[in-house]
Length: 140
Image (cartoon, rainbow, N blue to C red; front, side):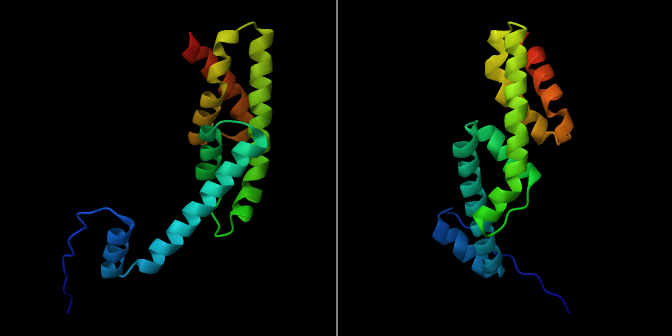
């Protein structure tokens, strides 16, 4: 025999209230695992930004769309590193091309456009072309 019970959501969205609500729902362990994975992903993202020198938006897209989040931030970072290297190469190549074309006014769009390509799940080999096309299309 199945019975359902309504557990009202918290009215206060503090950490303590959310933890109490998770406990009532029986998902406390899942909440703790999720918080740990988010913390790990954030640390990996920060490390990518500081290591490669590009925007948080590019790093966030790599972390959110390209890799698995692990409890160990270093493992998440290590999985993300090849994508970050590819992103850095696409950024440099796109900026160089815009400079060659003397389209300096579009340089500030490069990282935003790359982040968009990553978020759209474009294949790595298309990152440069998608970035340059986006920068030129959006800039005009």
